[in-house]
Image 1 (tube, helix red, strand yellow):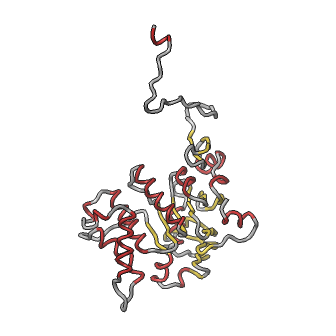
Image 2 (image 1 turned 45 degrees about the vertical axis):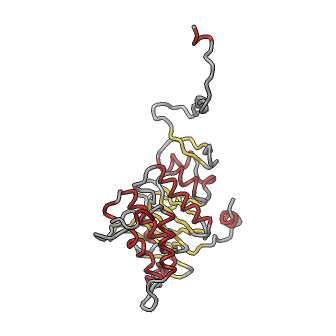
Length: 300
């Protein structure tokens, strides 16, 4: 168990640079969450999960100061986040939204370079450190060879990686990700999640809205479960992800078994056509190169 969860179990406050206190948030006059309180443990990989429309993205936008609570507050480093100047917030945390629109005619490297804007001012414009940050972000997202291409010419998955690269170039200690694997095929999803895992291991605080419960359980060390705009529970995946919670929150009957690779909780939906709760024993698969001899029945 990580240090964050040990502190929480001991009854002491979880260290958090980002938190919401009794926050009421929504859009215009529509309230999505009322009196919501959450803490993002420092240096954690936190995944926010829950059914569609439960307020996951709304919470993330409030933590990023895109939405301002109508009551209560969001705190950043112990101060109300709306008390900071925009550039101060942008040096502390970066947001990858669900959808973003790139300016017409902009090239990949130029869009990624915009992530360096919070680190520049009228006196100090583009520096070698900015160049290095952009190059590192392009390398991490495998976009170096595409750096001269127009963003408009790229596939949806490639464009998503460009936005991730811009966030990496921003180089903030806290990264907020709203469905970061959108538009990506399964191989690129896991490649990107591994990148975020590496950033987390390097000390960054990662907060991601995820729909894939098994990815959330494999990569996150702290889960926040929402339903109808409220927190159902929080904690480590092995404590939170249970068959009872999946049915209660998502309305899905499922088995929760250990992931055969990572050992983390793995959600396996039950067949709605049967009432059985027992997993089917998998058939053994021959390994490559195996050539079992036919039995007597096959020779007859």
